[in-house]
Length: 194
Image (cartoon, rainbow, N blue to C red):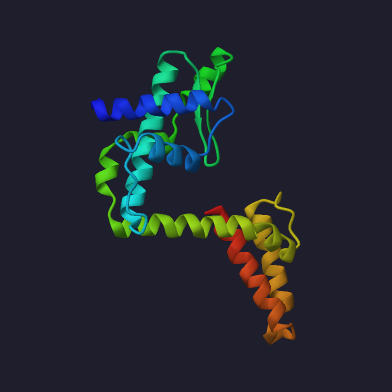
């Protein structure tokens, strides 16, 4: 492991120690930028690729720390979207569960992925993220339009959607505005499953 990476990981450990209740990735980046600019220099904020690389390198270090903490039985570094927090390990079964396959960890631990991403692929990742976030935000309203509660199977949802589409189709005397709302709601609900 490179000494710069080790130094950055040590800085992250220091900051995590100051925030036992956890810290957001944004706050962690701000603190690293201000307290450790020589280890974690702020990128050109207008360049999506540089921003992604900045984020990727931080996540790489976090997942390396997560592995280190688990191997040394020091705790579990929970790396979420809104909070990063070192948690105690409470039982062997929990340790086994925490050690299971994690696709995000696998991605960020492979430093080759940092160089593999291009400006185009990063923009596609960002677009996909915002699209998925938008779908999740609109999903409750879409379920309501379709008369669903979200507990139905995919087949049941599709059956209800088809019945609504049939009932409100403009060619069969239905209202075009209602039909369009049903179509948009279905795109949101069915897109959230993929």
